[in-house]
Length: 128
Image 1 (cartoon, one colour):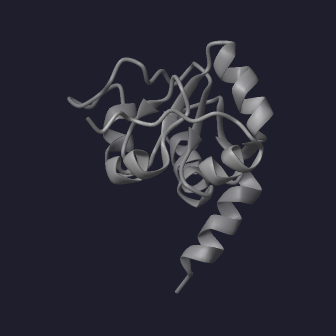
Image 2 (image 1 turned 60 degrees about the vertical axis):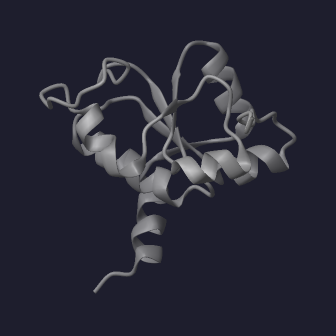
Image 3 (image 1 turned 120 degrees about the vertical axis):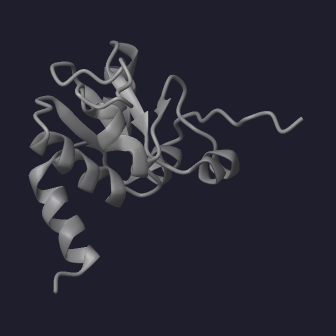
């Protein structure tokens, strides 16, 4: 049996990892940024401005153009960057999207935690 730690390490060795500053520049240039975290994580920690929310459990369905759940912002030919809390889910998801035929997939190295550590801004939902 393979452990999740082994699977994440393998995924991280295969996918393109970007620093927070690289992600910010790509996002500002029009690259789709996808937040894979659950709603309660976003509520607790905030999110990166401009990110599309795609809970990890729905990603494949929203990303597959032949799926009845497909969302138009997911384009297999366009660049996209995934992120999660610390980079594990996003690395695994990036390898999956590559297997589905996405050609320009990357993930935020270290996830939102690294983004915050580097002093990058987050948006927090108004709880009122």
